[in-house]
Length: 112
Length: 115
Image (cartoon, rainbow over the protein chains, first blue to last red):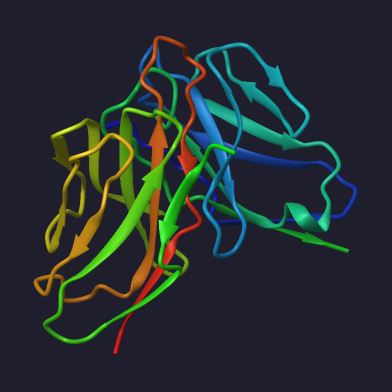
């Protein structure tokens, strides 16, 4: 199974960029990196995904290293509502439909 | 609107009792999943099903059982063999088409507590 490593917690000031790293050194060549976030006591929600190119959508940007062993989720202007647990997963999406797993996630706290 | 519905939101179990958590989706997804989340912990996979009448054990299947008789439904039973059932349970579904953009959709969760 692909494994991920994320820092357990991070802090960010409101209005500043939040950069959340994820190590997925065992990712397979055809596996996409997916990011989800979970606000307290709710179900996780999809944020963004990518294979090897950087991606951007209305919620965030995703930077994937050339060797694909790590990625960084960027929230360009963090708000208090971005306080949540952020999960990266190398297989929680795409054509993978077997055993989809998540790591421990990063608790992001955005301060006023 | 299409989505995935879990019920009830809160559930209490007595000692030695089996309880069943409901999960229904109208997204026409083939694959469905059950995860367990303990306070301050990540998501751990209990069971998953890729197609009707078929399901596989995840990482922590002991003390749980599932069925997949209909495409839209994937109920989870927490049996009396599960000695520490207090947790937040999440159901998810995903399409299994050829698109690489298939993402997981999660329900809003069920909080199970032991009386």
